[in-house]
Length: 547
Image 1: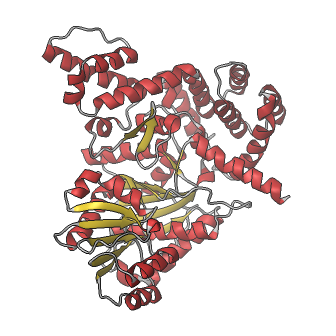
Image 2 (image 1 turned 60 degrees about the vertical axis):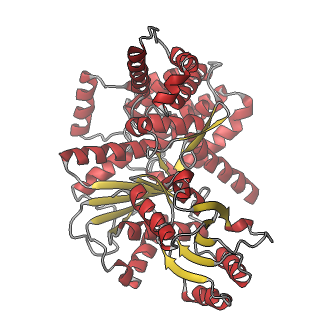
């Protein structure tokens, strides 16, 4: 199950079917990142696609009759209207129409009637209706999906349903459909997916029945999006914000693609210490070849080395980019005291010693290095972990700067109503059974490999339950699958890169022969702490206006 590979194959076939001759690729706002995450622009140009345009940008530009036009868009009402106008006054010699999902018969008829010049050569449903970030990670880039009651808005529910259906058809899977029992949002979406599979069973005729689809909601684990991260990809998203495999570092746009960046592919889930060591090893190998003797004791030393030896850039390819990235991350860590803050976060979610936690929070709230976002995350994690300690929580509110006090109080109230006690699983922070307590005790005796990555997302427990067939709280809406070789988890409310790192490591172990099902993680968006908090602060602003 490699989503990037299968997406590349679908796009490649789409372009090749148009034959030779110069081509223009006409996309929309949502299919553009789908293509850019699967191909570099130079790769597409090698297939005789020399112009890239957006369907929203159509103007009275000159006709280019010697070009073929390959159209790759979502089958929305707006896009159908745009295509009708395009075909009524065609600018290109031939049109090849590819839609990311099912198109209704009425829209196909409208397109046929508008094609008076008979320029359309092909109309196909491609089933590629989302963004393949990694081989096992899929997103829709869909934010702010909840209304004031935390119900998924109708347009968002429909978009999520369409994305899941296209993902199943892309992977050729006819799954056992399950949903989180205490989430009406999940039930609604999963039910619509199951109904579609039954109604359009012809589309799934050759699909394998070896997969479980789990539709779950973010409130099951709201601790994970609040944590600082220490594996490479997750760190970059938390500190610099990744969008469609791109981020901004030192005012430069940086592309992070495992297809074209071997160093990134090998280090996606490496922790921060390992990244620095791996870069140092590459530079040391270069020094040996060139008989250069320079000590590299810090990230700054490495940055200076790359600047002083431009030939290293040439040989190392993308590594110099990562020296800049790691340098920026290192600077932010030191500037904002993130090691100390993150250690406390991990203590809150993994240890749970109340006195130790609250005293340390009070100390960090007074620290001038502590950013607003870190004050938010520490207080919110405390509120979630020790929900019964209302007096102590109020005392923490009093310690934050006055400009933040009201916003933190309101965000905390909304967050706890969404994912607090009674909503999240009882064992979110570890169970209280004798076995669970013993496990934690043994872990304490042995110590941990990295105090900054002690936390495991609840997704880990869910995948383990699925492997053991213990899904009592995830009702089945379809026939059971013949065997459980694959698990697709869709998180309504957004996934995180910490969860993506867990899935990637799990799949790598499977590839090494350790067994277990392959897992694909999907969500309406990829969260970091800022985007997660934005969801709640915006929600509170709306609810205040409504009142």
